Image 1 (spheres, helix red, strand yellow):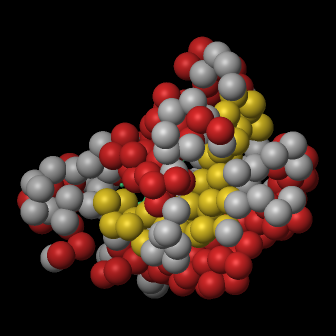
Image 2 (cartoon, protein in one colour):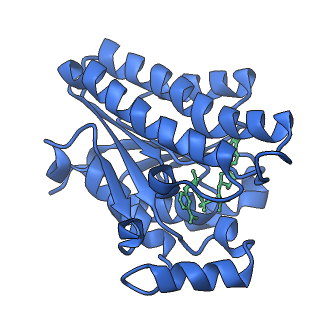
Length: 243
Ligand SMILES: NC(=O)c1ccc[n+]([C@@H]2O[C@H](COP(=O)([O-])OP(=O)(O)OC[C@H]3O[C@@H](n4cnc5c(N)ncnc54)[C@H](O)[C@@H]3O)[C@@H](O)[C@H]2O)c1
């Protein structure tokens, strides 16, 4: 038993891409899901896929009123928080607007910090072990053209993950990051075909990844099999980061 069937798991950005595939994986492991995203429940079509053991919170993770709704649910129990929601607003340095920079910081970094702060305070106060998992990216390791905002957030998430792991280890709270390579979700599919082909060519495994392969990494790191792992960033990238 890896323990996931006893866990109440919060996943942000769960309506699509990696978040949705991750929700599927935890659901199949028997976890209770609290899924968070911006569309209405009906639009998200999550209910038909997860007919039981699932609570949906329609929320923007950058909105303080919405964060209160998430906190109220966490007060009912939180074992695992997966800070998956993320956005890109790409532009080269001289063309990037303040709005593009700030919006990416708010979703990819500040919301990760805020939700981690709330979840781990509840875990600590209840003297229950817990797990926080944060979405980084391989671009945090080597930069990416046109993404000074996005790369800054992903590198910061790795540093913040290590710091939270140091601060929270004594409460049996583990904090890790996952750095996906190029994964076949909407975020990547809207990139030019040429860029996708180049990325496939660069990775030693010669393909882009599947969202399920990131969900599997989250499931491992949340499980009791990873009980001695904290403060790490797991690259799940087909070897792309090797260059
Ligand atoms: N796809 C990749 O290749 C890749 C690579 C590296 C890292 N990542 C990271 O993995 C995570 C998921 O990426 P994805 O490809 O599945 O993206 P996606 O665009 O398919 O899904 C992101 C989800 O987050 C939600 N979201 C965005 N802003 C939100 C907000 N303010 N509040 C609540 N929900 C919000 C969206 O509605 C969407 O459902 C992101 O953090 C991304 O940076 C993805």
